[in-house]
Image 1 (tube, rainbow, N blue to C red):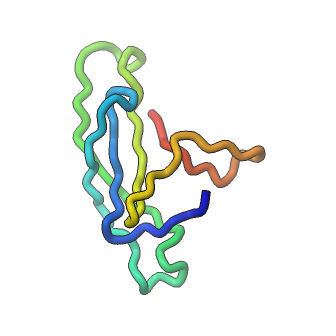
Image 2: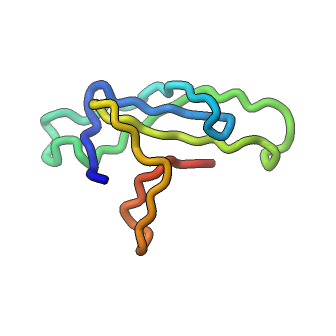
Length: 94
């Protein structure tokens, strides 16, 4: 999977029910534009979302998952395996 640009139109989605439903997170920092020497390819973008966590202990709650889309609408893969563990780009889960 090739890395893609973090640009206008990029978005992050968050799920609080293990991936059954998704909500769009708010981007706190904007994607890097043309002025970046890397052309925005390796940018971190902070995001936030109000997630309803109802009842039970933290251990009994479903997984909170996030996934990102680039400006072309391509989603990062759900899972991605590399033998040495680096370059991981799959969905993140709490």
